[in-house]
Figure (cartoon, one colour):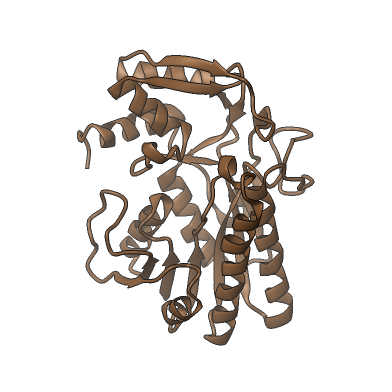
Length: 308
């Protein structure tokens, strides 16, 4: 099938393109520029289209002729979204509505959307968190992700556009951009290798579910092939790791100490977020294959150039 990967030169998107191309799929990538933001070689047969996500005409051209669309574009991070909720709404939800209109007009069969398992649930009442847990996000990023989920459902009801939502835990791994603070693992490794201070908001007891990026890419590919009735799936490991524990794992892998400084906690940081991925195991046939220790080692090898 012909697939469009929105954000295919990004961290998760580039791994998804690898996964799809390896499986023999025809892949088109939409990005803002042909200069990829990651160290990722061009794959023969992958088509690149240049357009901004907010450009309705450009998105329409990219969608044309595609049966499957993977929506991985996000203009904000959880920590920045509350600073300008209107920007978050307009650039994420508004642009997604234009994408859905383009998909409807061009006969797209299905959209697979990367939502946020870390923000749509808000403060958990119990962990691990199932998909049935109440959704009460406490940052604008989570509100926008949830709104997009609801619009996907609306277009499915009104226009028959099929979809899958993957609520992904804290993805990490090779090609993650530490300089943009995309994730704690990348920043910790950068501090371990290059020095500097790792800032921890709170006392370091905040617990997250870290899932390796190639496992996320496999989940996306499985969601595209899925023909069942399920629509929303958690993608995580079910293992919770505190920031202090994560720093220890990075130190052990790198053989270097990380200087830490503890700052006051932030109001949008929940104390614990660990996802229950039982539904993805049962319906998608997906389960994580990379342990945190092995994933940190792989990421370290990528950063130091010891592994392709």
